[in-house]
Image (cartoon, rainbow, N blue to C red; front, side, top):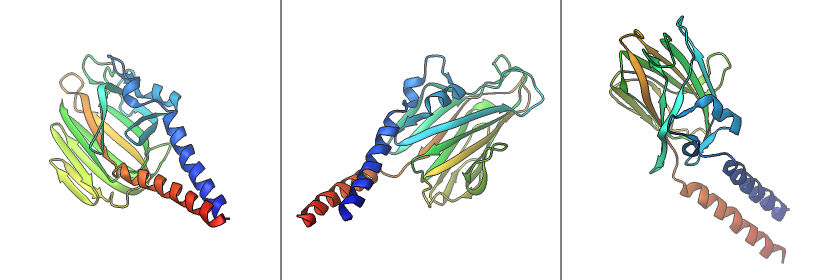
Length: 234
């Protein structure tokens, strides 16, 4: 019985690894012009580090006209020291594909285990980003239920939440990432004051992941149990 349980657990872990490897990395999808995040959904999302980003949604939340589009920028995806960074262009401002759009709603799902997040709205004029991270998704607002982070960053501001510790120059609300949720739903309200004098063509999102060694040790532990099960059976 123990041997069967170990075999099932090992196969499940191996299957998770195979499934994740079948999804392209975020940086491999980006061209010189960037990539519309909605097209990433067709490949089942994209991975960076040990995180899967999926279910991208973008909508025009203003009375302005134009094509609502958010792009993952060239060289905008990276993974370093357990931190995944993604740089987006929301195309808000005069001369962009946003036209006269002044307010966008942007949501996506992060899977794989997160212990912290950050937002940098440093490259914008008269812009604001309200971000909510929570444990339940909604088709209308993108994020409802228990919040693990809530922040507002105006032009030139940044905020971070690591565990239960908030920092940065913006306005942090809820900061409760200490539970290390395996799945997080992200919702952003991105706006500018005036399309002729304001813009937002770049903001950076970061997610802090547990040390990769944790999963490695888990896999080794299951392998060890498999050997132990065979020895006991003999």
